[in-house]
Length: 462
Image (cartoon, rainbow, N blue to C red; front, side):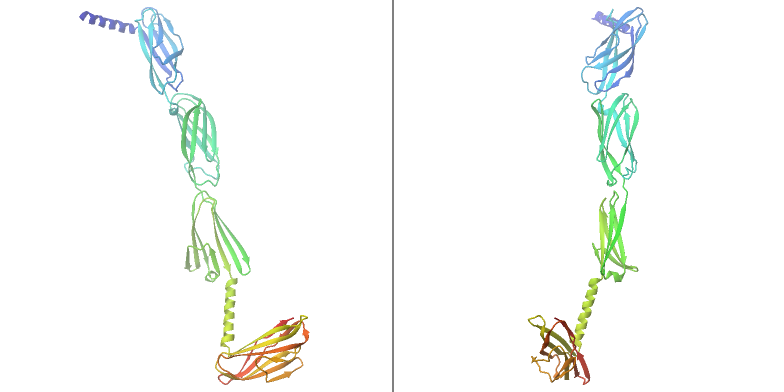
């Protein structure tokens, strides 16, 4: 057992001695690769033996093979040689770190050898590159052209030729073809213009980068659209008969939401005739007049109308009606003796005036009045009354131009009303305009004083 142990020790010492007979040094040229790419190393091989030898390179890893370079090296004593090892994987290898074991062994004495390991890193396609968009820190201005940068950084010492880059957003699409050296930083610049009505905010932009039909980057970044205000105001005015329509238009031609506060100040007199649509949120009485205030929000592209309608016609009609009511009130109800004449036309078969019917109404609005003498005038084209419906006259006086009828009434008590009605015939079947003059009444009022009242005149046409 002791002899066996000594033998093994001597064998190990002999192997170590032989191992020192071959020296191997390697320098990585391309030790970091993409899946399926070749790894490249420069190798310096030296025969440190005292005799010449032939040394063979044997790949011990079943997943790798050597593509180029010598397989057997004939070296004299202390001679060295340099060669390039191009190594390729057999099939697909997952991203990771691989130690490729290679044995350099003497063809004359297999016990003379040395093992060397090539360290190869396979990186994922999606880890080799970094990309980011760069714009103005204030954001993209919709009103002008904007410079956009695509910043690229290669994380590994791998050259990337024929990169295909697509940048998509709702505002633009950009295609870029470029190349990137290993560990290089690069910026691709391009100009974009967007719709000026684009609303402020952040929007998605997709970055797609491929290499040899492999996707390196598929990511989404935010593009900031800067805000700008552009509120336009338009005023129009349209005037009619005693009316005026004024329209204010506020439009947001910017790309940001605008919170508006708008005021209009008018005089107290104008306030009586003005009407607004829509109605103001508040009305304040100030030293300068009445201040109307509206508060509203305008989204980009929206508009807001304020209409002020000044209507002087309707109030004027109301005032005239009030005046008329007051007049009638005093005329009918406050006048001591109210008199009204009405004439009804009686037509002939030929269409002319065959006759008329006259209605004369008297109403006492005060205390009892006495000794009423009523005079009415008959146009000369008509005959004297031939029919009295209510009260016969006391006398009829014929004149050249007209005739006068007189009635006497002893008294009218308060509130008493009398209607005097009579009919007149036409001499010739009159055609044209015929005027009936006012009737008059002379009487003594409740104070015993003499007063006079009259009716309206009437015109008829035939």
